[in-house]
Structures are given as structure tokens and as C-alpha cells.
Length: 96
Image 1 (cartoon, one colour):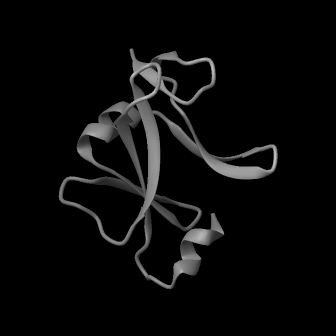
Image 2 (cartoon, one colour; image 1 turned 90 degrees about the horizontal axis):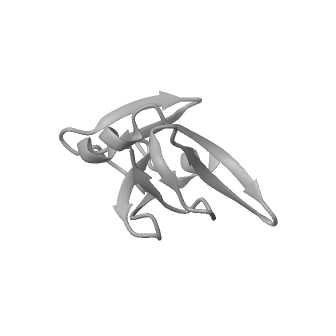
């Protein structure tokens, strides 16, 4: 997560959001954001500011964002206990 602080922008935040797509209909996405939008929910953990828009926050409530590692790569992983169904590859979900 140290990469977020290395961009030289004092208020860089990690935006976590939900977007349509995947075999179950919804996917988790992440991007770097330099500012909050009105209505965003946010929290800071380990020096990293996470923000989510109101619609995404509704689906993300109770989720855990963590660093995951795969073969030869690192990525952010969202564990969402409220997901109704998750596809077999874990890339998309259907709300409960």
C-alpha cells in the first residue's frame, strides 16, 4: 500500500467502487483519486484513505479491502460477506 503515498500528491485516496460487469453482474474496481466527491464515505487505515460513492458504499458495507498476491503479481482484494453469489473465478458477484 506504500505506492499510494509515492505519487507526490498530498491527498491521494484509493477509490473503491462497484461497476456492472462480469458473469454475475457486478465487479469491484479501484482507482486513485485526488479528491473526495460530495456524499463519499471514507475511512483511513494504515495511512491509506479509502473512499466510496454512496451507491458503492451500500454494497461494500461490511467488506474488507486487503492486499492479495497471486502467481507473479500483487493486487487489492475485496472480501464481501454480503455478496449473494460469487462467480467461480471470484471476479464478479451478485448482490444478496
